[in-house]
Length: 550
Figure: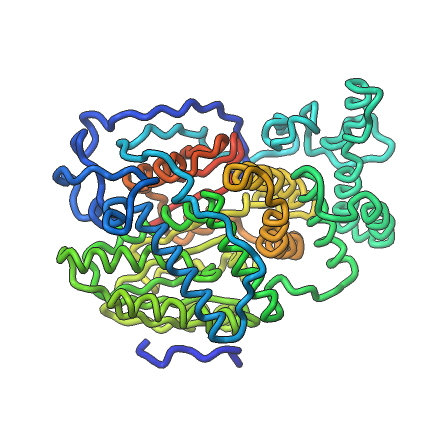
């Protein structure tokens, strides 16, 4: 089977959306904590090797630290690594003739923060996860649409002649509240749900009628977050209905440039990307502590920028004399059309690792090859310790069956990072995917607006549109295309494969809280649901990170 890029020649439910009111407090870990009250972790790796570390130098103020003090703060270390990583991207793009300086980049989070030399905070617990059924009702706050939605809703099917109030069919309620202003009605959401149900019943002609109405109601991705999210879902359904083969990955060098720039913008204004990478990286670092031969199997490498801080931590550990320099291999499972991105990722990370004196090999395996051969498509060595990173994207592509073969890889840790709200997770369908997606993306877009306002005073609406178009629209397209596929829920599949969920380390709590203090954007907070760590926008989880082991 042909792979469109060369391999390495070396040896090689959150569906239950509980409404939680949290009051953030910052406390010392107390007598049960493994550190003293004066201890301030120096780096991700510093905490991994000992449960009773000695007191270290106090972490400097985030806003004032310079390069000489960056290594005293793991988050600044990550900021520095990610910024340097994107600089390498810019350099590589210029070398390849792909440079595009037309998109100004906002200042990174590291320049937005406040003082972060505090001890671990107590993170609130979410109630245990549970499935929801047709009788479940949700509060309006779950949608972050308090100005639009004025009542609760059920998951009853839409009926044109029914007296039951549909979840989004609230025109009567809105009219009762404001007879003089009906333009805040949610008719376009009503119509979107009709369109989704047309796919459920294979009523494609009725779907064309709904789509025609939606094209009149949603002409562009403008307006409130819900309206923009609805526009992108309309585009996804339109692509599916027309049978077009619209790419969910960049198809040209120009689109790749725009995607890289959008990712750079997103990482610069929002804590979401860094939360995802830091919590996963920390768990991997702890699991692989002391390992010399390290192999990471990444099922969602994206642009690879999340490995910049990981490489920097390995270099920092080696430089301090606390460990032998690790030999790192990364195997990325990527789409067939990822040839140019694969080349950039490999050159970028290899160059960055070389500057840090880290031996790094990168291999790429196409999704179709992995689907056919499972883990036999991945080169493994007897002497290496393995970590695996999963995301919802791989389950959309190949299902969950490959998890039955995961034991042969003998991973020390398996990380699952969900940054998509697990749309349609419990009962996959077009309708449920749409409802979950509008909930998730309207919240995510609202958090983007707040982050943009914090960064630029709200004057960069074009920045938000670029992020939404190049980062999130492709994810929405993929989710809608996969909505009808029936797979075992990933959590159930992991348990069936013999894995058990484990609690993330205490330093991950510290990192998350420090990151949010530095971002200083009202509305973000960290919570826990069982063993998962969640980054929430108000009451809506945006990212859920969990660690699993045999």
